[in-house]
Length: 400
Image (cartoon, rainbow, N blue to C red; front, top):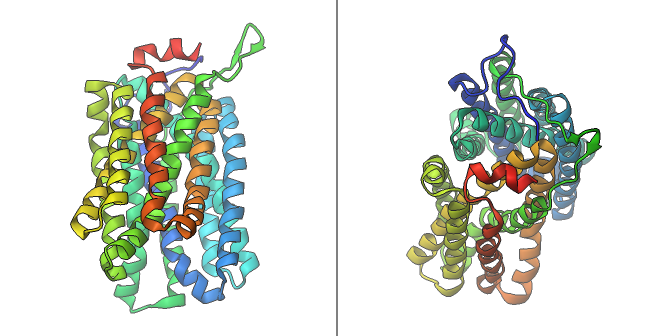
């Protein structure tokens, strides 16, 4: 992979604190908009009187749009620079949020969902690709830090639903418009800042002596790992609260402690993750993450008391939070946006479809025992981690 590690003189160097701050802000605003969208879905359902099938169709259309956009966006990020693609993707997401906020019908809500998929797919790949270049220029890990701010932004976006509801005494269907408009206004302000401070990214070449190089075989192994942790993370996000509620026989409010534990420990480990990578290497961190996630999922299949269930889900969040930033970082290092598009697509698809698969298993095995499936997949990550480079010095040999 041929890549420059500094930007033109008109922009901050890729290795500067300002460039790292720009990418951190990208991850945070992306997470904020997606969190607001997810947090508004129940109210949107109420406003448009949507059925479960209509919600599923809307999310499916957005997911397909996202997968297509990732493939195109990853290649464009290499061809013209990740900065341009990320800064184009963000206003598309903003437009999508406004569309959903104003949507008077199911059809227009689907249009908004598709726009979110298109904008987020391109921005997701591009901001990860830009993050990898910042990491290369800094010569020390920072991808976990970026992903931590995505999680924090996601939490803030979802929390804005409750905050606006309490501040303005708005409930139910009426909350969708003020939330979407408020977050869009914030994001527009952030976009103006990002245009000024985001560094130019290097163009990534995939040809040698005029011959286009194939995608390295290790990319498909990384894709398999992304498939495993995508399902494990998606299951934790969508099913942890339901699992705690049903297994511990508590009310739904108390059951939400499951998701709180998952989310909180994901943020904690992502804030600490770069230090762990510096000390132990990406392979060891991913392997340890797989061990923690597998043990956490094993615990929630075997115990039924509330404290032990919360501890198990906290261990799941602690484990899965380590894995994605490192797998995506390796993908970006060995093949830029093109390889990132492949790997992120596997993780994104599993995150979207995995919870539905788990739902099918819940119907047939029960919610307690269905968690054995993500436990097994997390254990698979432990074995697959052996294919990752021991250190960043080995990345170029891995790519060849």
